[in-house]
Image (cartoon, rainbow over all chains, first blue to last red; front, side):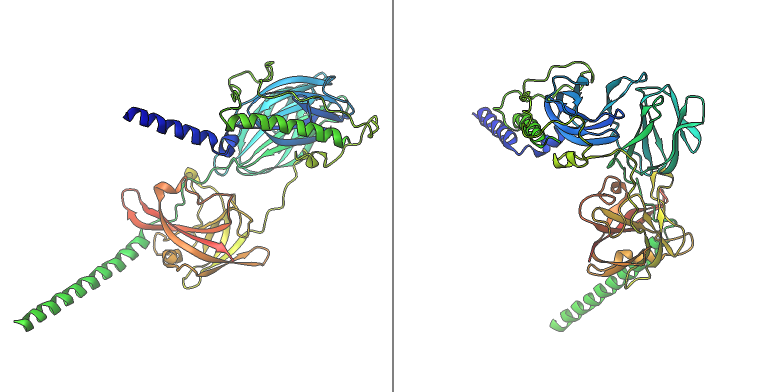
Length: 272
Length: 240
């Protein structure tokens, strides 16, 4: 009898949970997808599962983030005047988006200059308080490169479609890209502001041969951490200050009690 | 531009989305399985049955196809998907706070920008006459989140003005001066002691939600074995 009651209770709870608004579940099960267009001189349409999602998508632009339910999707990139996704110029590419994941799909050139697509998983873990995260991705028709900050290599020997991530102090750096082992910039130098608690993703895109290499930037914010403590005391003197006050308070209370006791005893005396 | 195509495509996508979400929120809508995250990201995987593949969008007969439509800024915005140049556009920072005055106390100090000191701790100025504003969080006057200003309660030799923070009455109106010369007023909501052990993970430093000013120092007992106070004193004030 008891058992069956419990069972009914459990079923009701499950039913209530199932009927609850999907908001919380939705945000937890959603994935985030951005799309970067890094093929020079080519305006395209982007289809997701056969549906036109980005129309007349121009080189050097970033779309998103789209919030999509976790699952598998097919991305196809077509000419801008294509009637549907049946004749893609890049793809179709099947991608799997995990719940809570953050991704960037890029349409770009491979090292040899052929249009292709890459799919990157973005690191959206919390950034230590007071720091910034920098990710560099090579999606250009160019050989291996060094990424320079202030003229010094911070990411050596990065080749298409590789990426590298580092944690750095926030601030503005002079960023440049040079052929691996050299310091003569093929891109930049350009000022790059790295904000605290954010992830900045820099793409080297375009073509060395065509002379249109460039940097594209994607920023993911909200990854900050709070300081672990606020050390506002040094010696304890303020507490001693308080203790002195407290001691006075106790003294006053004792006096009041004493006064009360005297009053009571006087009354008693009077009664007798 | 192909507005009707775009609309059709979007409608199709939102139908697909709605179908999947419906599957998550009700028990009768068939299998609502999130894809296994362990699957290789670029491996060919057939679309799951819960995501209907919509019919190809029908081209708009009225819109004569042109060879190369110009890049249309705002296309994605109209579609609800933000599209922007992938450049490093930087917002100019808001004016920083430079002064703080709390009536009824000796708290009338300069405010300087601070960050993180060692040990993951907020940096606190040493000067008797200075408090620190946590420059990585919202500034006073921000639209959202908590602007945090902190100062020492004592030095090695004396008690500092912030020792009176705990006595500030709710309703007190305090003033924050900004670098651009403007003045902001806040009304005190409350002053509380937060045990230091629980400050990490509290919402004191949150950067979203309603805008508040948080003024922090130390308080409670001095713990001899730790060489530290047991609490932080946290004053919360709302913008006027």
